[in-house]
Every structure is written in structure tokens, then in C-alpha cells.
Amino acid sequence: MYRQALCLYVIAALGMANPLCARDAMKLSLPTENTSIFSSDPSQFYMYTNRSFEGRSTKPWEGGTYGFSRNPKRTADGLINTRLHEGIDIRPIRRDANGVPQDAVRAISDGKVMHTCVQSGQSNYGRYVVIEHQWKDGNYYSLYAHLNSISVKPGQSVKRGSPIGVLGYTGRGINLTRAHLHLEVNLFLHSGFPRYHDKALSGTNHHGVFNGLNLVGVNVAELFKQSRRDDGLTIAEFIAKNHPPHYRVAIPDGSRLEIVARYPWISKGKKPSSGPWEISFSREGIPVAARPITGTVQRPVVTWVKPSKTYHSYLTKGYLTGSGSKAGLSSSGMGYIQLISGKF
Image 1: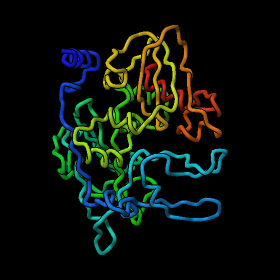
Image 2: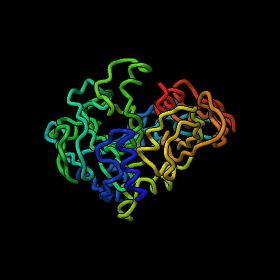
Image 3: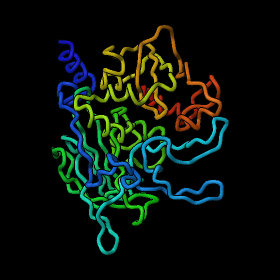
Image 4: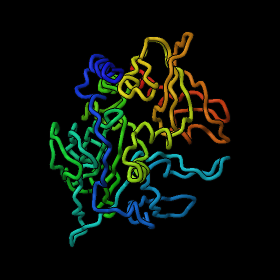
């Protein structure tokens, strides 16, 4: 009864067609023929990045992994990477005589094509596809970027393993040598993103709500590995194990917390209300927990952060300022909270 009532609530509140009522198992398969992620040599799975650090040029394959894997910096906490890579970069297996990749790209799970970007110059992703998956605890979105070509259209249903395009090197900063598939698995942030973009960001939004800035990615490499061991794994369980809270933010009264309605596991089933809330975020900016709080909150404020010897900005995509046990929201962090809370 609770889940049925929750389905009706989310449909009424957000106008979603098929939210939590659909309870498909999260059955995954890799998007290309490259399976080296499961081997003893993952360097054969990931596409390297070009790195110049302290006068030395290298090509670390680790730069193609998920997480803070780029832009190294020496800090009071030692050598850390300060730039988040929100997906994984998968190197091609097949190339023709001219070095052009031939690898087919396939849907990682059953779903529906929600967006295709066919003009490579309209995004840093180049040509990309977004597919919605109706899994047990919510609707999630896989994103396939830098494609050479796309063979599906919005509204089309796809099965796990269905071809959706060909691996390529479209998008900014990628050449033929570094051709790869960039793959993400994401939570969806807010249905009002186009309005937020027009108000808060520059440039033209060609992608509606499926702009990459309206999607926040989980550790998709670990998701593949852990779902292989546990075929009943849910995203909520996965996030609890792999994306611990790193900071909390108090959200003002009157916020429209779609994220809580869309993913009830974040709030343990508590419905969004007009009063203030506190949201916990992982380092990557993933909302991992939320709870209503008492009192009046007039503007977003950081209520807790994991203490650090170095600047919090290095550890949080630049969303936080300060160091030690004190932190505030940067301008980009404030913008992110505005998007999350719907107050824009």
C-alpha cells in the first residue's frame, strides 16, 4: 500500500509517467566488447589521459576511471587529484586500417531513449545518448558520449545489449588516438533545469533536462563489479556502500525537493514538505540522504563537513570553501544547491 500511494504521489507532484511503480531488476551488461574491467589488467579497459605534472608528461590510464582521478595537486593532505571524472572512459577494441574505431556501443540495460545529441559541436560530450532505466528504487539514466554515430531515436525502447551507436571521438579535447566511450549512470536532479540554465548559466542549452549538468553520476565501474556479484543490488544500496556522506547542507523553507520525491530512499520515505531540510552529499555531489529539520533556514548553509587538512574546494568539485572542520558554499556550490532545491 505504501509503495502504491507513493507512486500516485510522485505522478501527481512531478508529472512522471512511470516512476517507482516499475520494479525492474538492475540487470547490467558492458556497453562494448571490452571486458578488461573484470581482468587482472584494467589498464586495457580504460582510455588514458594526457597529463603534465611538475614538468613531467605521462599518459595514466587511471585518468579514465571514475572519481577524482585528474588534475593532481600537492596539498597538506599529500598528493591528491582535484578534478572529478563523473564516468568511465572505455578504450576501443576494434579499429580499421586508418585507426578509426569500429566498436558497437550497446545499451547497458533495458530502457527508453530519452535524448540524443546528433550535432557533435553542441556539447563537450560530442554526440551522446541518454537512456532511462526503471529499476527497483527509481528511474536512472545511462549516458553514452563521444559517439561517432547514433542509431536510435528519442522515445525508442531498447533492450540490454541493443546497439545504439558506434564508439568515436566527438566532443572537445578528444582526438582519434584517444577515441573512447564515456559512460555514466546518473541520478536526475530537477525538471526545471531549462529555466535554471537560462537564469543562472551562460550559453545555449541544446539538451533540455538531459543536459549533463542536470545529471549526477555514481561510480559506474564499481556498479558493474558489484552487480555482477549481487544480482539483487539496488542503486540505493550501492550508494550507501560506495558514496559516504562528505558534507551536509541545510535547505531553506519553501524548497521544491523533487530529488526526494523522485528517489524516496534518500529520505527513507519521508515526503517533501515546505519546511527546511538537511541534505547529505557525497564528495561527488550525489544527494545520499535527506531529513526535515526544525527552525527557519533563510539561505543554504553548510551544517557539517568531513574535516580536512587541505582546502575543501579540492575535494568537492569546488562546491565548498574553507578547510579543517569549517566550510561554506562557493558560488558554484550555491548554484548547485539552488538547482537541487528548486529555488531559482
